[in-house]
Amino acid sequence: MREIFIHSLNSNLYDAAYAPKETALTITVTSNSITVRLLGLSDEGRFNPIPSATVHIYELQEKTTWKLIGDYVTDANGTISIDRVNTAEWYKAVFDGTEDYFPAVTYTQLQAQPPPEQQPPTQPQVQQITAPCAPWLWLLLLLLALSEGKEKVIQA
Image 1 (cartoon, one colour):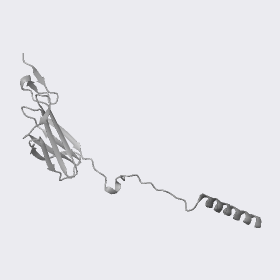
Image 2 (cartoon, rainbow, N blue to C red; image 1 turned 90 degrees about the vertical axis):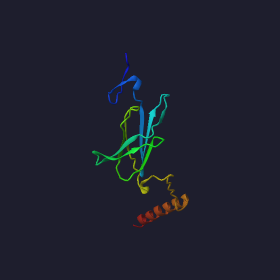
Image 3 (cartoon, helix red, strand yellow; image 1 turned 45 degrees about the horizontal axis):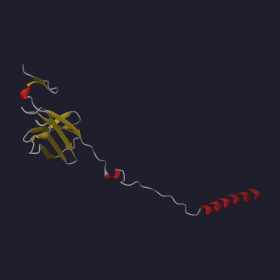
């Protein structure tokens, strides 16, 4: 009897001897670049780069529609690096899979940095308040102010 492998992502039936291997797909977006990394599970149980694989990269436009940026091929390290030219906030990468590896999809959101004037200072700003004169002088000024008020009351 042959073993049948059912993959939970797409419910396709595979012969156990020819079952595709698991994949790991990541996408990282910075203010000026997009980097995708594609890895596949080896027979030894390690994730290794998948070179020469096509990955579709998309951006979300107007929060409703995925627009294809392009189809790119991974290098020897399983990596794709491209310049980010648009201002989209969400991106996704799609690997359609091969005979050897399962398909994979990953999403990411660009984490916008606040403008420099809105960023918190690197060190806390401490404002020191100093009295313009010694405490005894404050007491003397207070007594003088009170004594002037009494003289006015007495004179009235």
